Length: 339
Ligand SMILES: Cc1cc2nc3c(=O)[nH]c(=O)nc-3n(C[C@H](O)[C@H](O)[C@H](O)COP(=O)(O)OP(=O)(O)OC[C@H]3O[C@@H](n4cnc5c(N)ncnc54)[C@H](O)[C@@H]3O)c2cc1C
Image (tube, rainbow, N blue to C red; front, side, top):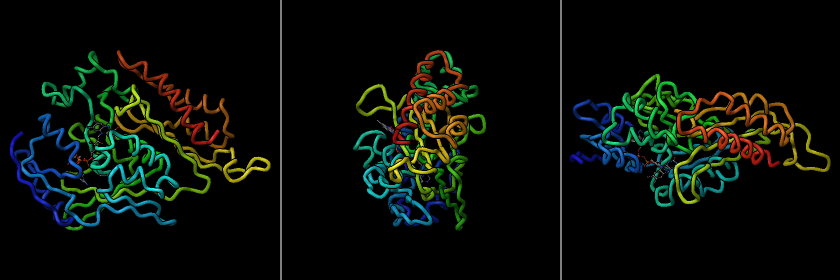
């Protein structure tokens, strides 16, 4: 690994100004927990001249909840904090579960939510020193080891986005705040944040090289919101997923006779998001349409799960993901509804 200059940023604006000086000859990168950054450097994918440490910026590690604004996560909040926050678990259960099932306890203690959303794909070809050029990756994986790759939207490139908390955050319709130099600031819905590979290959998101991701904002849950998350792995110990699914349902209608708030069975609106099956977290729009306005039942969940995988286009070695995903969507819908 080549040597680099380390700078502790003391403010977001300073970090953005330092990042704006990046150039192909002297790349400047941000560092949060450093988990993915260090991997990318060790794997020879990036060789920064300067590393800007964001952890020295005060105030970016706060979790706040307000009834009107919802949940605000500073970019330096760790996955462990999200998984163990009683407030997040009570109001955004799918997010707490997604953070709690990501990677290992050691990594969750260091990994930040901002860095997690900005990590690069885990494709074995992209990460391998012989295949670093993203434009070449596709030709190798199409006839090669594509077991863990995309089963949707994979005609141009089949790498999947790595973040599993992103699956839950997209289901909750979260937004991210991006700050550039001179106080420039914008808020982007996470549903528009991740870029499909046909639009851009050198980056997976709309963030510009001079921008710092400062906050993740999750809207307040609507009354009657119920949610569930499931990460399906090959083994029970830590592993990357075959797929993960987050379901957020807003239940309405009358409670069943003699029942309480939690026995409402009619789905007012549904958000079903699937991760690790497409280059970006993918909403199962056909399932959402089928669920909305209906009373939850085993048969409804089965139809919605069937609809979620109807347009899958698996590759030579990952057709097995289709029935796995269908089962996980069905079970996660039922878990969210409490059925
Ligand atoms: C064994 C293993 C298993 C794993 N399993 C999972 C899993 O199941 N699910 C999952 O989601 N992840 C998993 N990961 C990935 C891990 O969670 C991520 O690498 C980690 O979350 C990245 O966060 P970080 O804070 O360390 O980011 P960093 O490595 O510091 O940064 C990541 C990238 O984002 C940029 N960056 C960071 N913060 C900002 C910011 N605020 N503004 C602008 N740019 C920024 C950096 O320049 C870098 O390019 C796993 C990793 C390992 C090693």
